[in-house]
Image: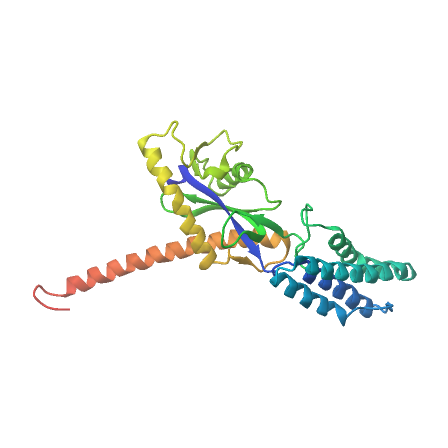
Length: 301
């Protein structure tokens, strides 16, 4: 019966990356190319190992002082140095074997993307070792931007057990994540949920087999549905526990597959913790009941 009523919400699973800044990314891309060149015997005209870190330091200081024109100058210098190293390698690569050329392919593509991307470019690169990372803005004052992947979580409306969890790459609109999430619940539990309770971010969903109730709606809301809608917000602390007690706050696993695995493993761990807590309470009740039966009336424990 409890599987018929579900609550669904999304959160952001952050990736284990440093906060991305243009200066750090540009310098790191240059360092990667220089390192690869050294490993495979490509002699560069200049590697800029001395001035690169200096430009990064100055860019961060100008940003801190809100001197953004000067900061942009430093970033442009880093871009030009990265471009020179990249072109130097590209000129020499045809002289080397196909195997060595393939080793440089990813690093050169990343360097080109960093040189071309602007503030409002789409599909930007935020991390060199985790290129799948997306920038997700949820309008929070304390954390305006989070870098990772969107995760969809489904719990039972009454008990708060997780019955569905999946990563949603591509930063889709919340409403478009609802149908795949309900399909996953059916796949995991072999039960089609009858009622689903969501927040206002899910307006414009494409669900037909399950009755969806959006927070704050008045039409078609009976007394029992109103009670269930009030329990919708109980998913927030469940997600909070998954972030603090589980590993949903930061994903250390590699790639988009790692993101998907981490979300499911966190959900399984959350359910196990809830079951263990219930068993602890039951055990305490049994122990206190046994203790009470051994103590005679008028005798202190």
